[in-house]
Image (cartoon, rainbow, N blue to C red):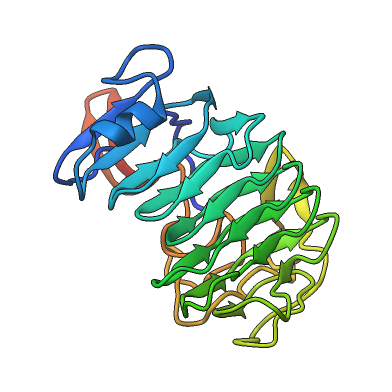
Length: 281
């Protein structure tokens, strides 16, 4: 995403209209301290906002809800679980996800977007074929113990997995893979990483992004990275430019507060400045 003027650091979440908004805060400032408990008590179309913290628990996302973190820098799902996150419905975004015991995400259906899956013991994302499509958009899959995204269609159903604008780097094995025995479809487009996938292969590259300072900072260099302005041309970053690959790209990339309007009011020997801003978090 192109740089925008930062006016202050923001770690709280900006409210977004939804059927209901549920707050998870490990420190007790919300309705729940556990992500999984919030999902159990949520209804379809709810938004669950997770405040900063490290959540050591297995998470099962099986409802049509939006599970929204406070950014990978601030909100981590981690644990010695295999997998640490299981998804069969809904959307998850703005988290860092690490499984010290196996796979980061087991994905059957739903949407994973603008997440960092890093340092897992086995696969970053394991896809098991279902009857509906699953999507992985603008994610970074980095330094995991086996494949980055592995398509494991063991049944003869025809569900499809779509990876768009993702960066899969420095995993122990191939970044995007669908073995010959696997049923279903895997479409990889406008992604960065090694791949054995032959479907949907448009706009892909295999080059060092490079990241600023992984695993802490997954920004890519402006105009110097092969993943800058090389994402899907039908998708834009929030500033209207062509989307970047990776966490900080795409229409749902997280952005810090930026000035949208400034009002200057002279008053004697003083000048009053009022600024309006917006943020995705």
